[in-house]
Amino acid sequence: MILSILINIILIGLGLIHFNWVIGGEFGFSESLPTKKNGESKIC
Image (cartoon, rainbow, N blue to C red; front, side, top):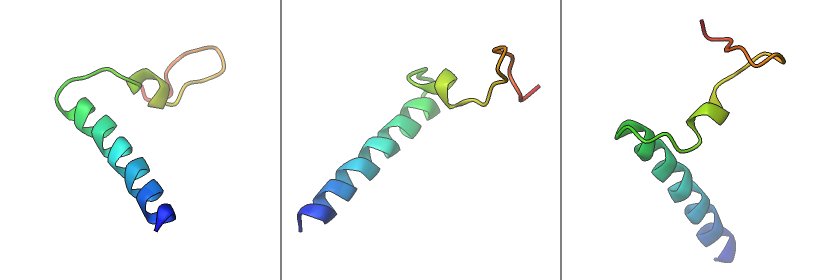
């Protein structure tokens, strides 16, 4: 019971972060992008 509540809280939190990105939020976005050791983006 406690484990299922904890997992639900974690998944809801992750879902809220993704929803924040959908509506244009920047919370945690730069930390989620892959970067090289010198700080350059690996994406482009």
